[in-house]
Image (spheres, rainbow, N blue to C red):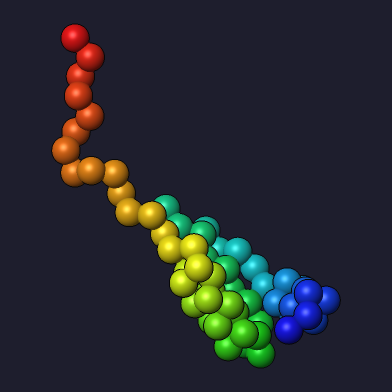
Length: 62
C-alpha cells in the first residue's frame, strides 16, 4: 500500500476519543475497523510493548 493510500484510508478516519478512568479509547468508523486492526497487529509485531521494570524495588541510596 502506498503512503498516500495509507494516509487516505487509515489516517483520515472520522472518529472520536472517549476518556474513561486511566484509558483513552478511540472510536472510529466501522468501515475502517478491519484496516486499523491489521495495522495495529503489524505495528505490535514490529514494535512490541515493553514490559514493566523488575518487580523488585529500586535500591534506596544511603
